[in-house]
Structure formats: C-alpha cells, structure tokens
Image 1: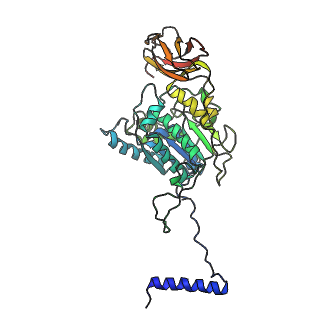
Image 2: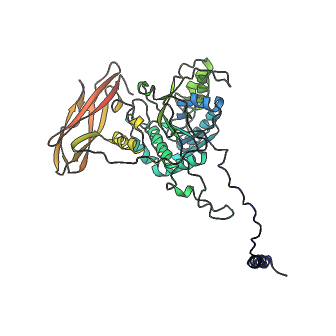
Length: 460
C-alpha cells in the first residue's frame, strides 16, 4: 500500500503525464477571495490626542458625529496619563494610568465611541513654557509614529483630528503639541508603502501564520483637522468648523452640552474635569461648554474651509499624496530667529504642506504671568563665508529687564549659535499683549524677529 505522500506524488506525475500526452490542462478551481479590511475597526474619523480627558475639548462634536451623523469614530491616546494627579485616590504613575484608561473608555462609550487605543508614550509633566521637542524625546518619537501609522492603516480613516502643532497662549501642554506633530507625520506616511513597510507585507506562510509581517493596506487619509486648547479663539474663527454644543441632539433629545458634561464626568481623577462635569449634570448648568473649533490643516480632496469635516471625501480612498518634505530656507547675512519649538515649527509646517497653520497667528506668541521670568531661546545664524562677532539688540516693553548680561557672540561661518535670554516680567494689573523685538548687530547683520507675549495678572 502506498503512503499518502506517495499517492500525492503519483497523482502529480499522472496529471503531468496526461497533460503532456493530450495538451489539456486539468480544470481549475477559483481561489479563495482576498479578505476586505476589517470592518469592525473602519473609522470615518480618527481622533489622535495625548492624554485620557483631552477628547473632552471636542466631545460635543464627537457626540454629534457618532450618535447623530452615523459616523464611525475611533480615538487614539498617545499616552495613558501616567504623570497627572489623582483627585479621588492616591494612585500615581502606572496605577494612575490604569485608572485613567478605564475612565476614558467609559467616557467615550457614553457618546457612542468604542474603538479606543492607548499607546506607550510617557506622559510629560506640564510646564509654564512648553517645548514640544522635550515631549517628542520622552515619547520615543519614531516608535510612536510607527504605531500611529499602523492604526491609520488598520482603521482606514477619511478624516483625522488632532491637536494643533503650534505654540499658542494657553495651557497648551507640550504633549498636546507632540500628539499633533506625530499625528501629522503619520497622516503623511500611512499611504507611503516605503514607510514602515513591514506593516504591509503579506504573511510569508501559506497558512497565513507568518507573524513576521502584518498584511495591512497602505492608506492615505484625506483631510486633517486640528483643535487647540488656546485661551483665545480670535485666530480660530473662520479657519474650519465651529460647533455649537447648545444644539439639541436629535437622538438623545438633550443639548450636546449635556453630553459634553456627561462625557467629562467619567474623568473623576482629573482636577477640573470629572468634578466639573458631574456638577454640570447635577445643576443643569452647561454654560461652560463653549464653541468647539476644528481648524482645517489640509485637505487632499478640496472642499470649503468651513464645510463639513468629511465634505468631498472618496469612500474608496485616494492615492498616496506625498508632501514637500524639508527644504533648507534661503538665508543670507547674519540673522536671528526664535529657537526651540518655534524654530522646529518653521521647518515642520512647510515640510508637511501646512501653509494654513503657518499663517494662523500674526506673530509667534507665548503667555506668562506678571512678576515672573520668561526664558526666550534664540538662534543667531551666520550665513556668510566669514566667522563673525554678533551682538543682540533687544527692545523690551516698559518695566521689563534682561537678566542675561549683554554679550558678544562668536558665530562661525555657515553655522548657528544658540542663545537663551532670561527676562524679568513686571507685575500686571490687567491682562495685556506686549511685544518684544530681537535684532543682530554687527557686520552683515540683517532683519529682526518679534515675539508677542500675553502677560496675565498672575500665573498663566
């Protein structure tokens, strides 16, 4: 009796012989159909934020999209909130992250959102003067972007909403800005098959259990929106959607503002979030829910700036749309620019086709409490072929003073010299905008740079 392997070989040999003698190919059967992307996780809108409770800033719009517009909404948190405080227990660090993750899941489920992911970036403690570069360092920048690209390819969103990658006056946590930076990068990479290509490779085992490549599709999202925690909204008006949470939800028969309070009430560990939401539910006073602004960062399918978030999107997707990438700026002579996050963003925006973001503010800005100190990073550029000595001319508002001695800075040819000025801010009786100007002095010196500072009566 032949073994099964022998039978297989005999059958193959017999078939080949028959084909050779008759020239007739045996009948073929139709191969198994390729699986479609997993519809359980398909998202029309993907929200990418930093901390559990960040979504409360736009929860009115998200409730409308999920509960009344029939949109599939998913949320990604780049951190689990391990560095915050806890208003209801002694939980800290990893334990607090476990608490905040559950709070966020329950909060989002209350407005119809169930697909929620948490990444492993570390929560960076907030500072008065945020620096997005510090947060990107602690977030394991490259690995986190890779995870975001994977989730975009898994969920195939048409629109992405994230934090505004911009320094603005307000709480403006640096993790918020970092989430916006990494979400923008993932938006621009997910459709590129040369980026994180291991996520796209089909399983290399015929049974589908290769487990060394991931089998996801490349996916190009079509519209990118930003929101901001800025304390002023003048620059946001007319730059995208403006959602009024006082409207009544057709399905829930209550104002969206009540759904905002309900969603916030689950975040009890967070000061000023959970307790305030619970208080609003108890009193019926929802006046704290102001307009929600979603700023159009860019669209690959046209449409109006203030139109619907998914206006013009193609359900079947669109081809990959490459961005400009980094192009060195055209500088000459000796110049000065704001350093730190400001210098980074001046490179980041054009590289990612974000002209709309670059022109949002009339000038770079920051906020500070009166009577405090303001640290201003500067970069002196010498784009000549000669080494030079540069002084800085600083124009300060009345009552301000510099704590940094006036120095002469040796700047090598074709190089930059980093400077950090420490400025003393006088007390302020009323909130006010003030302006600082910095200019280089010396051979080949040209131009100046200004910084708008919002000075408050107390800490910002």
